[in-house]
Image (cartoon, rainbow, N blue to C red; front, side):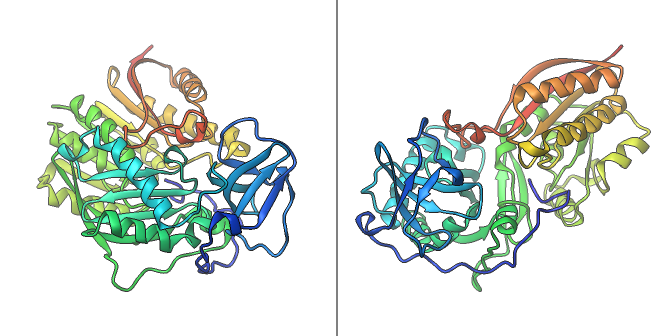
Length: 411
């Protein structure tokens, strides 16, 4: 969700990084740490690097050791805070196509238990650190596999990643991209392949969606809100729904499919609104669905109707802990406006996809926003993403999404 609003960080000139020359782990250069690792988190701070052999390029594969002995194999990123991204804790394990096949098969086995294919053909196949590949996200979107590289080193491994995916999914097309924010920070990009698709179509809970694979945010479709969209839809039968930051209409169209009387979706992104409008036609929404290109804040201030159900699903407002206070103020302002405009007794679904915002901090913000709006909240559901977005308990950043369902009460 990043990149939908707010000034980007200072960027470097984006270049396509060279692919890595793969070597057995025993032949990799070694990087030594100052201190032993105290936990199994795969991120190693740059400040903990004591010595490297010199001549290394960003994204190179290295063996990592500490005073206590071998640590594993990692991607080397000396120019950013996360100086090393551990890919394996076996210092003798080679990083090649076979490595990615093993990781992908383990991820597939986990997701097979959820029977996602019964309700959708769009899901998260590999969830970065939670599936033991730091910096790599892979979504299955219908007949397309969409890869998102969150680190330059992962982008340099695109050939073995593609080989593994072609082995496991020979009938699917492949799209590999650099994450927008990572690209700006590390100065890399990936060019579209001439033969790759521009769009695809997915289905979820009986709703069909166009997905823009080239200009869409992140992988093009937010699979993480699948269960929350359905939960909202089941609360919306016969009611009016306002979906703020609708993107391509996910919450709004699910609510309509579940019996909402009318839905309105609002987003600042003109291209997203165009796709949402196309999705409404695809699902024969008729006059019951309306999509508006507008900034959420002035739109809510000028709103004269009182929706019975409201969704607030803004982009990532806190990129890192340094911006936490500012981001929480923005969340509070948005939620105060929403609470003031929703019909008393109405249902509010409010979300944060900022990993730097804890659930406790988000709930505390909502308490303060409700006080400012002269409202109280009765919370009946606090959720995260679906099971295809697992959480590694030792990597708290993998639990990033909060979705709070509440009744808004007038004082």
